[in-house]
Length: 334
Image 1: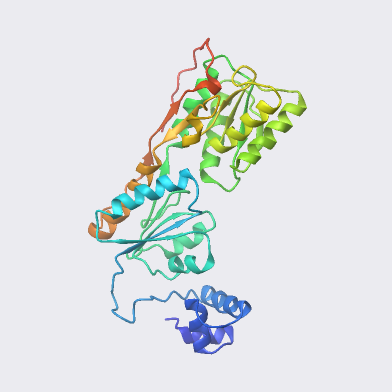
Image 2 (image 1 turned 90 degrees about the horizontal axis):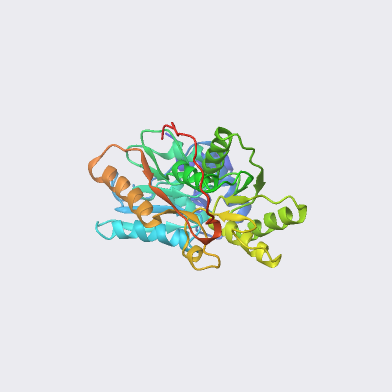
């Protein structure tokens, strides 16, 4: 079994220095700390921070590894997680994107983890997950007995958005994509392209990154080209709001000039003018479902069940046109 002495030898430092680096303490250089951490990864060394107290001790703590705290999107997820935790005797550690806090995950200093952070690699999750350390993921699809994906029902929500536009006679529909490394973006994009092909449509794709500014920039480029679509589907609401802002600056209106649809139903979407049509999902329920699954496994070893959080399309002013047309029958396995 690999020990801290092996790590120290590999990194060519003393055991004390290795300990400082692994625990994030002590006055050592960043270069030395990184050398020790690299040696630990290479040797697959994962110390149990609580072993000094009791070999099989439980921390009664859940770790949440999330991209960031800010914004209503993440706040609602965290509220759902916290609501479930309040009804247990578990504590909660929420870790944003930082090396020192991610160490909690890598060294298993919690009983289980909820991951919503693309910077934590799927390879690392699969390597770390075990019966004693289950992991719930909310941003990717992984296959493992001890990793549970709890995901939004992106395919259903995207189909409803597509046919909302198609049924109103719109045929020239563009897609504004989010971050390329996002699982949600990939599912939404692929579903939209599949439905467009079923209906004999060609769908141009414009690359954004889930930010309002990227939606604004895509809209500016489309408007400057002079080749306007009848409608755009944005992979999230923030990009859709940026798209609407650019349209307003050019004296254009949705849906008269271009119909605009988003995804997520963030609170702002219902208050802007025009109110944004979007796909809604309860992020509170999403966070709560992820936590219940994890607690059920930790407390009762309940088998992880595949879980998709339901979505529903919300039609508002930004895409509401009359003259709906029929769509082809759907025979799609969900």
